[in-house]
Image (cartoon, rainbow, N blue to C red; front, side, top):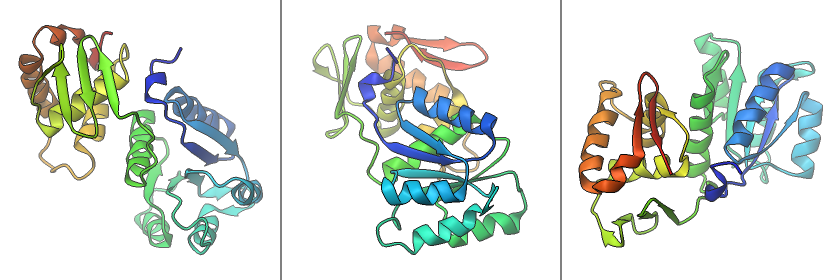
Length: 235
């Protein structure tokens, strides 16, 4: 069983990418996170799929065999039924003007190839949360710890333990991906988001975790530092 099954993420994602290796990599990492990810390799197939079963998020390559992905993006933004669909543009082009064109056409985010898979997943999650389509459970429990996402309350052995907003979010992501190593960059992207200050470094994660350990007491032993990589919650 995938360790992420407890999150019950079922968002449908359509990947429009003609390079088989890239498409397979994206599908692999998205499905590992619990998403229902499907792929097509042309604009024509994408149009047919959008008409038949609109996804909850679209990852769209720019350079496709039958045209520019931005053309499809413009069509989506002009369609009343599809206009609100989050779209991530994926491209090997790194020119600033190219990025500006995509964003002005209505892209929600822009990822250049080659890309980091953890960063791509982080951007997908951020867009789905923003669109209210994350479909995460209201509570999370492991090793005597219980988190209630709606009330933002945390408990250890049924006793409430007040956590700061970042401590709560950090613990939530660790529990949601129990038994899996999460890099500092991954945690920084998910917990602190893209609006974090430019001076924010991964050291802030170490400091936050130190405070979190003190508050959790014995269950904090489950949070293991993996030298050179990041942290893992051993369930």
